[in-house]
Amino acid sequence: MKRGFQTILSITYSICMLVLFIIFFIKDDTYRYPIALGSVVVALVPLILDKFFKIRFKLSIIISYFAFLIGSQCLGSMLKFYSLGWWDSFLHFLSGVLVAFLAIDLMEKLTTEKSRSEMSPFFIFIFIFAFGVFCGTLWEIWEFSGDHLLGSTMQGGGNFDTMTDLIADTIGAFIIAVWFARKSNVKTKEKV
Image (tube, rainbow, N blue to C red; front, top):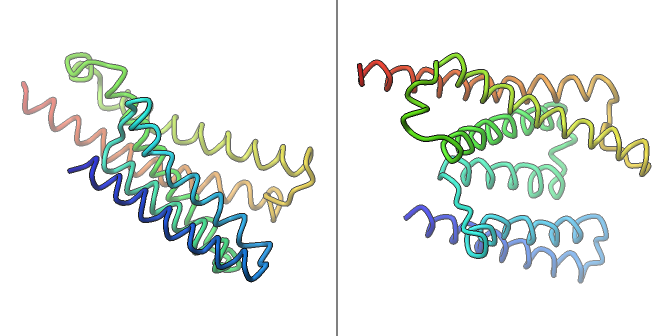
């Protein structure tokens, strides 16, 4: 069921973006057709990872991933929602949630159920939260580097933009880290 849902999402989103690419290319919309083309590629990433590398993601990651793609590519870039002052912060909040779910998935793949049952909820919280903040920081380093080395304008508002993005990433990661740590604490108590 989960893999079928992932396949449907990947293919549907890719087809929609391919149609938009063709439309924008015909209209010679040089701002939007590269975004649509890139969207086709990133929509297929979960499908490619699953089919060729047997890397499978939880449903929470897939849903968060496509919510982020729709928010950033379709709404943010193509429909210019980034002009709304709060849109970028909202997407950073979403990316904090997405990365926190990824941290949970990584933890479950890299540890055994027995070892997780022996982990304190605080350790689980710290791992998920720190992973989310770390990935948000890496993204901001990427934006800073792109702006200074490639002449892009990803940081828009400079330090204010960077700090607002990091705070939004942190809040998203914090909420999921608290939720999962509490959930794991309940499971631990039930086993005792």
